[in-house]
Image 1 (cartoon, rainbow, N blue to C red):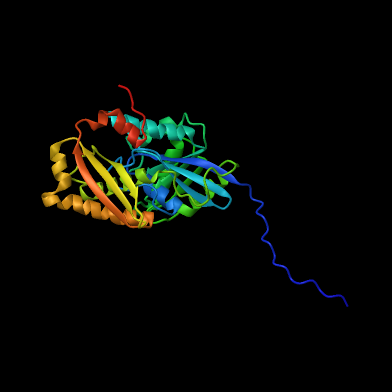
Image 2: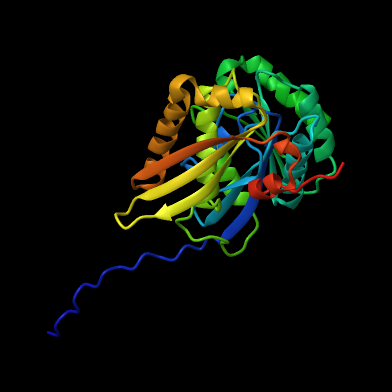
Length: 314
């Protein structure tokens, strides 16, 4: 009797699912929950969140994997009626992202319904040829009958092949949306390594984290016209990072607000930002914040370049 062959490990069968990759622009009115949704879809914080309107100023890409699909989500600035140069730059950036994407997700705050900003976006989307998905957010705060009526109303304004109802904050319905998008992005090779979560440079993300903490601490007191730039970054031999950032405001009175009595406010902002940056970078961070008055920084082309925005002409 011949000797039997030894058992060999069984190799996993190769997936017959085609590889897919696509860019998905998430657009909507200010405070619709776009950044919260993108973070939930990615499963990690890649874009800042604030109750202050128009917190997102530039399109931020978050990257997620679902089966054989790589999904590149673009968190865009809220689309609204622009009044200042910075407003126009933000709205232009959102419109460009929508035009360049493979799929456009329109996110609507179900509590607010069809506002002027939402109606404006619907008119703009009528000229976008890419597949559209309607997503109603914050459904936990609205009755079912109202949600169904709102979905019908929005689809009457513009046909959406797919409609989802979610709570981005609580995660309800997010996986179903993600699965749908994974099935509908184009076939093709992945654009980013499998373990990438974002294409945002660390220096820019660090500045955004500090801006988030600035808004959290001074939401009611600080005007919208403030920005943060990472001016120096040193990777130290002990594995820590030494980061210097400048907070730009438009008036000396705003500088006083940011500093706080005895410097207590800026120390608190620095502590909050440093804590989150240390967790994000997975190493100790030494953060040094400076506040600089630059009148009319919203009309300075260099500030726009540093933020990654095009400088709109008058």
